[in-house]
Length: 210
Image 1 (tube, rainbow, N blue to C red):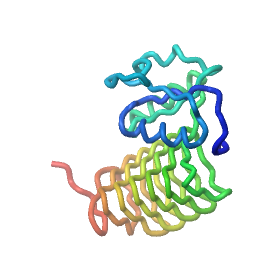
Image 2: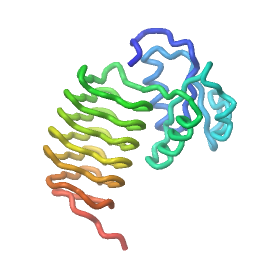
Image 3: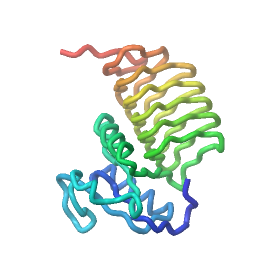
Image 4: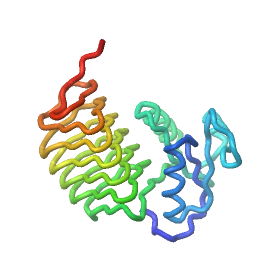
């Protein structure tokens, strides 16, 4: 993590100027970044300096990057494209989040205010952890997943890739969630989820598509 309050010289280009992008910008400013711009295909203002297709105009010698796209699959695709082209992505860790020293982070990770990550937790690339999440000890949050505000996981939980967990959901200890699962807001996971799909309720059950 960057030292809070330090002045960072490189400009950060945030991909996506919507709600997620504004949250990331705020976190980066609090972390010492003073030069932040956006690329976005739909929004235009003084901070948006181009569309996403303009990304190759910005070279790693002068710029760092953050993919702030809420959709897990799109965030993954843009992150992998940046990585392939040798562009460095930063992390956005709010100064009021608390991460134990043994926590391992990938890159392009966002951790919002009042989130807590306990010992021996591993967080993959492109993960979004929103406000007030509690990630207990020995968890794995795999790449390109997203945890909504107030999510709580107990000890030794495994969350697969491209998983979306709705706000105020809870996962009991030692549960495993496979890739590409959507967990509805307020759901409670008490058993392993080994099939992708939408799960809702207390306890969480798979919702059949119609």
